[in-house]
Length: 577
Image 1 (cartoon, rainbow, N blue to C red):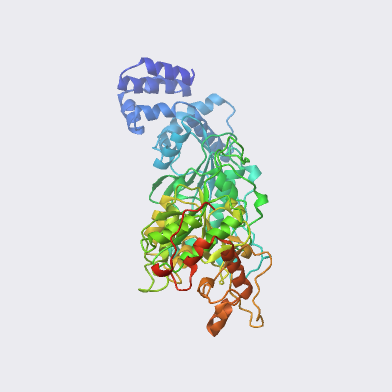
Image 2 (image 1 turned 30 degrees about the horizontal axis):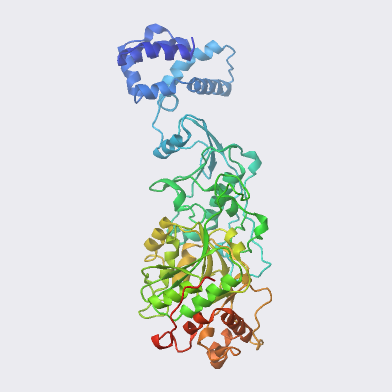
């Protein structure tokens, strides 16, 4: 008697009661029990034990349940010092043991909803699941899954977020060790299931927690290093967890969410880049050559060729509230063009930027787009940063795969297109080294990211009331670019009276009074005010004016020190630059 006899006989028997009777008969014969035990009460008892005929049929596709019961019997007998030599002896005891322990062995429970979502991705295939910080037998999962517990050492109890994102660091700083599994032990995974349990008070500081970071990094590395070969689905499930790190698992990749359970289908090209980055801003990003050009299509690391479309990338800046930065944006565009960039130039402007100014900005090289500005919820009325949250609009530029945001008071000295290779959120550290400066950032446009930022901006406070403080809270895990990609014109050494910009600087950030507001091209007017001395640099000042002098004369009136009146404006003419 085999299980296939049962399945064939089942198809021939049409009635529900007859099906159960027939199934029980063959089951009894299969395990060696006397068939005369069969009666109507047994039938109804069997009906109570299983949710439906289909569920029972599912359980009959293999004899795993019998093997489990048999193993249990053998285990008990070994403990008693009695070893059964005859397999028929084991079979004769199986029905009684199965009846007494019907819930774990025979009663088929419904799989959790998240697992049903996962199985739809894999159809009838057996699913290999890696368990990260989850019990070896995942609660509620009964079918179509082989599970393995992923072992790794937890990061030291004394390791704090301030070690991952330190305030004091230099170009040679390195990150602390965060233990990872032995990836060669775990192969052919289709799904990684992880759990980050809630703790009392965790909601307040949980975003900056080393244990949460470690679990997320373990999951990301398993996806890259231990996945099944081929192009099949690859999923991540967080069950009964604190929110996954959205810096790693983006909302765009979210397949399903209910309560504290999330299912992601990650963009593996992006995940592969992330696992090559340091574990935090405690260390500079690796050189671009470390990971080369990745194709956005497929799961492999591929160089671009004629068949693979290059990602859509652009520099973007924003003007709002007043026209005081129109000149800066014009010179910024010219500096990018002079650096031979191959990327698009996008400028977002609210209705406070006049049509004439937009014409000049387009003549300078920008593609312009109107936006509605966004008020900073924690700034004072008429403060300098009252409308700085307008910067969040850059995440709505979904036409592009990646953007480098760059404020209008920066200029580019040398080509920096290479930084598009880095993932979101990559930036240069601010004066407070554990924070990044939002004047230059690598970001990945996404409507759901924008929606999340808009939702959180009223509950997540900003240390300075502006976008920079808010973004540092939302992207607590970021990637540190070298300072030459955003050299902030701030000099804090009291013995330094010259304030030269460093050699090798590619981008200068003009903090303090802006160069287009100064009376001369040789002298930085920040020297004129003692409280602004720290922002003064004649060498940086002259660098800005060199770019100004190389741009078409028709654009120069927009940088007049008598700012932006109709009297001193020259009508912009469409110029191909």
